[in-house]
Length: 372
Ligand SMILES: CNc1nc2c(CCNC[C@]34C[C@H]5C[C@H](C[C@H](C5)C3)C4)c3nc(N)[nH]c(=O)c3cc2[nH]1
Image (cartoon, rainbow, N blue to C red; front, side, top):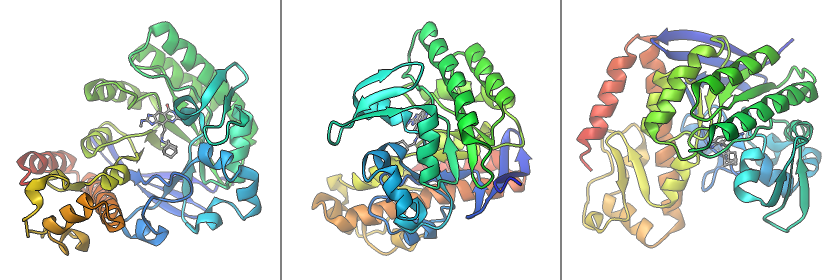
């Protein structure tokens, strides 16, 4: 009996509020999933990540398969015990990273071979091996191996990568072997072409997946192109399965994605921006590196539910950032992840109350008013 199940709780227009039940706990959607790059959410203890409100985080197949190796993580009890995060983990298939990080990569019908950017060793990633690695990591939600291309791209190239990804989806599903204790998601490709996207969604639906990711976006296209593709494709995805927009995004990308029927998001942005001195607040993003903060005794946001937004002056946060103190990365990572969780929690409540439009308008107005 499948132990990962999605329940749709409420809808408001195209926006949805739901819950994914898994053997390791529930995931309330819309959900933002913090990124645990190589078995750690940078600068955060796992319990701190949980305290921000995160129900699930991302592991990193590409890094872990190279170092310390999937078999070693498995022999150490799997990724949950390895990093002591006992709630759900989603892992990507590794292909996106191979195409962006690895050297001397060769893509064939079989899969992709590449040299490790760490020690130059040669590796092969196929749909079958990616399923095996994610299973060895004991991930709760795993992704098919796909080919994600950058935009803009020629239609022929988008079509080729989309069709390959469907064949790889089929092989991934077969290799998954109907495991009941984790979910397998397919990934819709097709670039910015509605017809290709439609064919990809149809192909994946006929294979049948526990969830459907929208890939091939946040790869250089303008936000309005991403939103158009989402508006076209989410209506073609099953309503009783989660939709996951991969690699997105900034708060206004996430709000727009929720309005267009997306349930799950992941992005390195909140933690990476935090390490670079950018703080996300209800009033938008504030660059604490800027010298204008050096005498500002005001807290970041005295009305924030997050104590870390009230505890220190902007002058102090500016000092931490300027001196590159480790505490700066810690505090701003926590502030940004907590803000992303406030945003998705607010959306969930608004959808249940049928006031998503008001919530979106109020949220955007506060960003625009930005008293930063
Ligand atoms: C940013 N834009 C964007 N991302 C994308 C990703 C990766 C999602 N994040 C997972 C990831 C990626 C890296 C960094 C962290 C940890 C780990 C390695 C897993 C998040 C994607 N992944 C796959 N399999 N397919 C895509 O089309 C795709 C498109 C994206 N567009």
